[in-house]
Image (cartoon, rainbow, N blue to C red; front, side, top):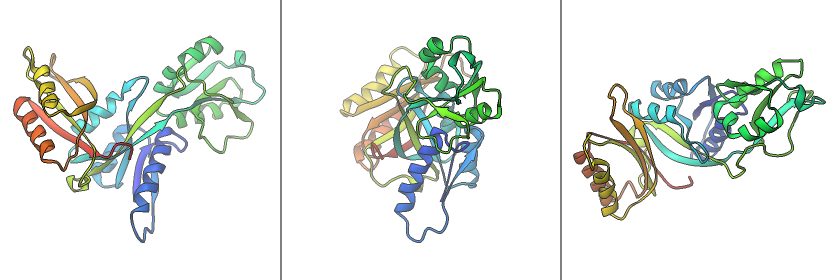
Length: 284
C-alpha cells in the first residue's frame, strides 16, 4: 500500500497519510510493504493515483477556519474514476519554529503554506509586524527554507507534531493560530468505483444547477424532501462558463440505501451535471 501526500515529511498531509495508512494496512493480511509517498503539489498527488503510481492519496478538502480547499475540490471534480472512500478530521496546532536565541524582532521572514500564514495572521501582525511572509507549497517546505537560512532571520510555521527539529532551532511552546479550535478535513482518495465502501453514513457529490431562478432551491428541495441532513455545501465557478456554479454537497446518508440512489438519480435529472465524488463513514 502506497499513499501519496503533499510533502515533505512533517506536513499535516503527511500526518493524515500516516493515519490512513495505519488504518488501511490493519485490515489487510500479509502486508509486505507500505509507505507514504511525498509529492510537490496537489496536482502531482492526484496524478499519482490516476496513473497507478500509488494506491491512494490523502487530500485536505476543508478547513474549519477557511472553508473548502478550492484547488482540491476542482481536482477531484475533474479527475476520472477517483473516489473518496474514507475521511479523517485532524486538529491543527500551528507552532513557530525559529533559531534558538533569536528575538522575534530579529526575524525578517516567515515561511509556510498560505493557509498556515492566514490562520496565524493575528499572531504575525502582533508579534512579527515587520517580517515578510513567504508562501511555500507546504508547511514542510517552509521549515526547510527556514533551516537553510543560517542567519537566524528566517522562521517557519509548522504543526506541533513535527519531530526531529534541526539542531539549533526551537519550537514555540503554545499554538499560535488565531483560533485554537481549528480542524482540517482530509479524504482518502482511490481509483475505481469498486473501492467505494459497501455501506457508509455520508456521501459527497457535486451538481451544476440550470442558470434560472429557483434552480438551487429545487436542488435543496430534493434533499430536504427525503429528510437528509446536509453537512456541508460549497460553491465553485464552472470553468469556461461564466455565471455557472458547481455546488459540492456532503450529506448524511448511506450509499447502499435505495433512498440514496433515488436521491442521486433525481439530482441527475434536475441538474445540468451531477458527479458522485465519494462515500464514507463519518469520522473514519
